[in-house]
Amino acid sequence: MLCPVPGCECFSTWGMEGMPTVRVPDRFEIASIREKIQAQN
View (cartoon, rainbow, N blue to C red):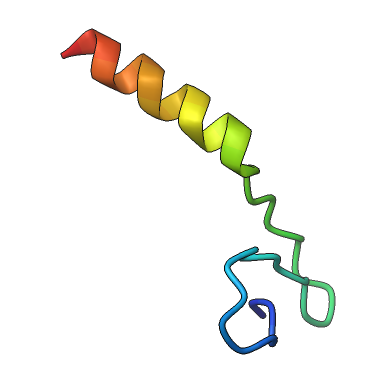
């Protein structure tokens, strides 16, 4: 289940009935991953 707040961009997730929790990287980790991928091209 994604964050239920309208317009929120946190993309937080919650597990549902025993399902594993999905970890969403924060904006700093996403930026770091993006830089590493772009450096490879």
